[in-house]
Length: 386
Ligand SMILES: Nc1ncnc2c1ncn2[C@@H]1O[C@H](COP(=O)(O)OP(=O)(O)OP(=O)(O)O)[C@@H](O)[C@H]1O
Ligand code: SF4
Ligand SMILES: [Mg+2]
Image (cartoon, rainbow, N blue to C red; front, side, top):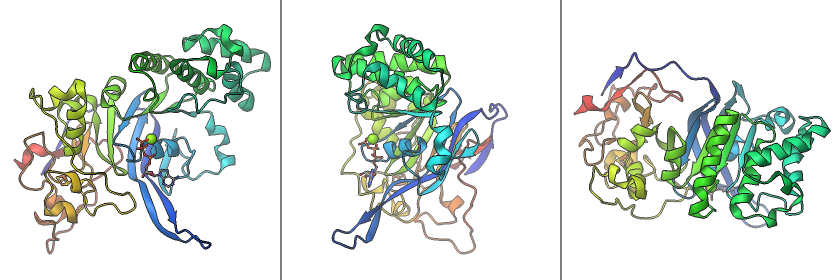
């Protein structure tokens, strides 16, 4: 495979957040009095991405692939096992609670369950006001008018300041959660499946509101979703996760127009409104066979191999690197290719110093510069292998 470049690549954007090699391994302990660590849940394993200021990145994948864990690390509700989370250039990954104090207001989170995340004994006014009171962002007398302004912005009646969460519908409660998350004017918002618990008819309204929020407040969104259709409308860039790893990431057109990873292809074929484009006009669904393996003991080599119809010997021996294959497109698959046009030989073998079966070739060193957290101005040309 050869490298190609494009002089027209735009200059690097102003990233509000850069995540590199982010990893969370939860210890698994034995039962009994002495609770020894007997293994680790590899919930997130070496994930890298960046979030432009005022931009949005969608994070999708099946249940248990590590989306929420990634979001919770970014919001530093969890301390990562390894890796960097650079917020405006400062690594916050291992900061103590005290060090995080001034940064807390800048990174907020919206949760899936709008009821569970609101205190039922607090009025709406007090729910939205509390962050401003704790962080002392406004003089006391300005807090109530600001809360009412925020309620109005999210489409709620500012007169309902004194009502309790149970007096609102699910969609309205999510609006309260959004108003609360905006109270401190954050620079990053992690939205963890913010509309999954809502009726389909309400989902579009809340998504429209989030788009208004993004435009008005210039917030960087990490938008977590199961539903590829929702992410497609919201995010110009999307990352697909499988068993704790990013398997494909790219701009919307590249990812939906020409997905290169068999897992992305299967996910897209299952999403109703993009199905036809994914299969080139044929209305056909790719079925994912089998269950997701345990993250305590993930498969060797490519983690997707136990469910992949393209898997060959090399897939069990060598983990495919997340290679950049277009101006804004990366994929981790030895046989990356458009649906129905997968190469017959691994595209990665030469780069990794192995033969087509994944065995090391004497005298050939693997390249060590295959992955980078950013998009580079040069990338690997898949067509060059044909
Ligand atoms: N505190 C924890 N201790 C141990 N394992 C955990 C913990 N939190 C999450 N996990 C495990 O980590 C893996 C990833 O979980 P996570 O909640 O991040 O997935 P997800 O992609 O958000 O799934 P869903 O779509 O169901 O919300 C799962 O196997 C989960 O069981
Ligand atoms: S590396 Fe192999 S197993 Fe993994 S997705 Fe590609 S073809 Fe399938
Ligand atoms: Mg989750």
